Image 1: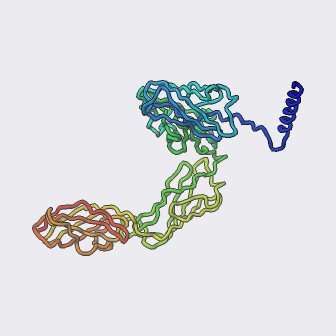
Image 2: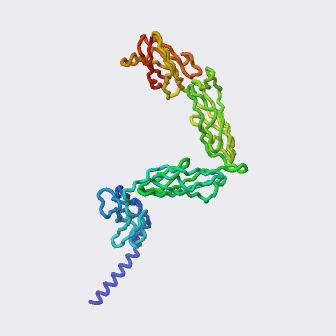
Image 3: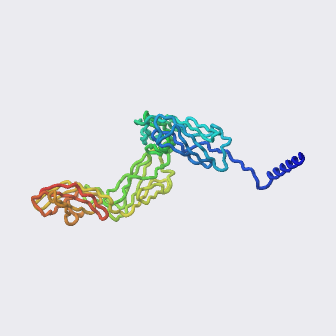
Length: 437
């Protein structure tokens, strides 16, 4: 009997050994999770709603439970602990993970318990009625300029203060150098940076970035001006201040200057004006070309500027490489789409007549006169339009004058004027009361 049992044992071992070497039969070994940072668990903030699950990864998912219990939102002055229960995906295991492996941003303690397969995360106590910072605009940070001294503090607000650090720690800003500013905000009593969204803060003239729930702000400025001997190529392409031709608009003669350059504008064809004292203006259906000549400021150069680098809004814009002569060709001049409201400057009453004067409105092709007998009757339109080429007295007062018959005498009449063109009209002017004779 003993020999028979021994023989059966030997046969079983041989069979098992054969199975291990059988092709297609393998022992699958799970990989230990490697993603340590648990995301999606937000630091408790008074009045905010707690999350109930983590951000899913390719290795695991997870649910979140809070203690002490939360009715709806986090209470003030309370230390909360989040218990995270992980569920690993196929091919992964938590076996072998150490107690200090996992990390949660903003926590004061994060510990993994292998026996229960959960993570305990302790957070700082919530603030007492702290209000989330709402001032987005950071003031007091001055853009680097060659030879200037960097600022070291921001403009203080009622919500926070802030220190400023510059890359390279310059005593004064060097020429032809790119600087990055880093700002560290400190919330004042009663305020918190918890709840601040990503890239919430704004610094004038530059793109600022910040992480969620953070008051550390960074921004990189354009290169500072060079020197006469070693100037920096102009890097601003937009040319501003060039008037887009619309009917009766006066042309600009200078661009909007920048820290890098200024410029003059010449228009073709040339423009006249109907009267002395009135500036030249654009005419309907005429195509205008603006020739812009740039002058670089000290420390900058047009050498290195690409062909057709510059841009003028509303125009086809061209320039040669390494040159600051810009040609901007606009579409044919059209009517204005927005008309200002006329302002009545004077009204006089006569026998069955009223003479009304009003301000000139740019782009008006004609004007309509409305009147009201007394203050109870309907507002009526005077028959016909007053063409802008009529009315006379188009001179030093930049306005029009027109006389019409309201059909009454010895009565108070309210007078209104409206500017119109084929595609737009203004509101009526304020009423002007006059007594006919």
